[in-house]
Length: 364
Image 1 (cartoon, rainbow, N blue to C red):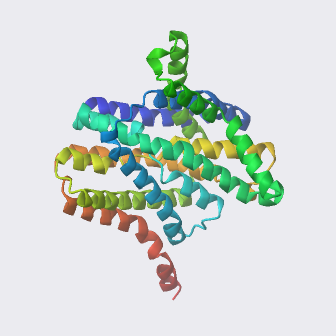
Image 2 (image 1 turned 45 degrees about the vertical axis):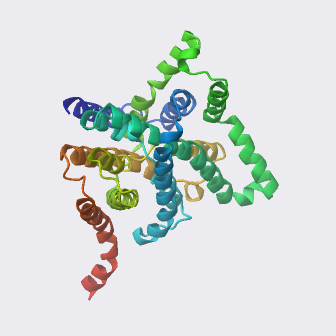
Image 3 (image 1 turned 30 degrees about the horizontal axis):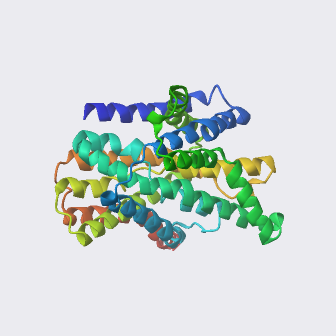
């Protein structure tokens, strides 16, 4: 328990370090340099190691399929509830939320606590489930990001044939996709990290260790705390957590899960914070638009909102996951989970459902 808390505190302190560095590093070019290191070095190395470590067992395929089902559930649900929060689905904010909300980062926000409270066996099942999430975040969301970008700039990109060509060229040029293809080739020949020369495996391992600290420091440096957006982000994340719990209740009921550890696992993994991977796709698109001098009003994504989502999602998910697991078997009950899910959903929706009537009443 103490070790898990220490890990969480370190993650939050790294965000704080990024906030402190804002007084030293104010140049946008320098901040973009850090982002480029993340996108071209740290992230591809992390993805390579994750893919090379995948061992898929047919008997365990249900776990990645369920997590993938959750990803798509939130992905298709997001456009339906965004108008409630006053967000247009085709705005830069709407596209940003549609990218980030369905993704999960269990490695940062839930794996340390699963290992601490539920043990190694549960952690192994959670890691297996994350394979589905990795596929969704790395592949599907990348295609969606490119599609949103091309759709947003369809007038400049010309004919449909040109758009497809642009998409394919972007796919080939992205470092993360080159690395993924390399990993797939190695896996097809039965190779893993241990099979590679020590120099190569050590290079990827050391580059991968840059990932978490650089991402969190970058979040602290890039985030712009505006009261209106903070309230909006908090409401959306509370709603996401509530809907997630209701999804978990549905899965537990449909599959008639009775083992407390499996119930808690089905609850806390989907409650993980939003992933950095779709943020990396968003950053890549933003860099393209920087190079083309695209104005803020014509951007495909809202970078500030994306950073806020990541900054607030991590502590909220950590508190929820840690609280549920620390409560023993209290939350290993569908009735308790249903009530808690409805409460969180209500807390997220309430400020937006009653906002307009309130203002009308105030004017009267």
